Length: 298
Image (cartoon, rainbow, N blue to C red; front, side, top):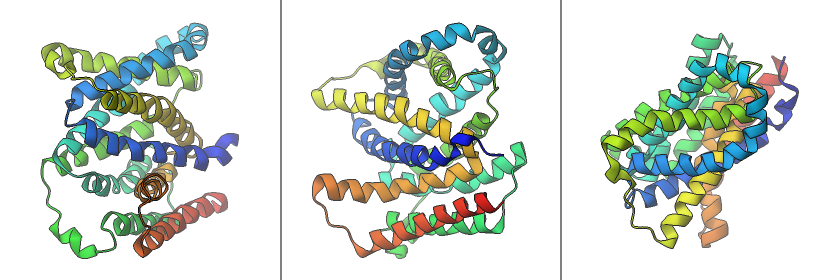
């Protein structure tokens, strides 16, 4: 039986995708001034300053559950906080945002495979059809409706970093579904940030120059965004959504990222929406609807 809060899962997961759309853009811009490890370390250090006060009381009440879950929290910190984010930022140092999102579009299928192997989650024909439709929509959006551009895509360093990031994120999402019931969700997010920073600290100590930043108002605003929007809020939304409906069904919401990009450009930058934007978005939403219908009929 699904979590009673699963009716909110689509909103939570879509919110995470929206905020992460901005994260990829911010990561590409900030990558010119801050190395990937440094950016991720600064991002989660600031996020932790926000998370710990919010979760302090809950952490104090749940010491026994936290002590019993230390290995689980270390795994969350390694996969979702440290490795995936560094891989993604490294990718953005070497390739365009569109190429990175194109590789990320394979994540839902990988998450389905991992969910099947680790959780035994069944997948029905309608769900696979939804993933295929949504993936095609993401491809239309990323290629700007010109599929011939895909032939020009080369697997450079950036694409390889994203290929490493995809299974890492799939493992993180599967782990979320295995959260110990005694471990509160808010404490889990705060302590996974602690664990992620613990994994990254030795690397930062060995390369302290990654934290040397020529701070400007723009860089400060970008770091604040990835810390608050893309870390605190987006991770909370994603975690709650995945814990409600499972990683296999949640993964498809990542295909909303190339949908939100053109919409934000239209609203904020007065850019024009093209026909391919509408076709791509229609395919993505059709795919999401198919997976939701499959969930209700299962």
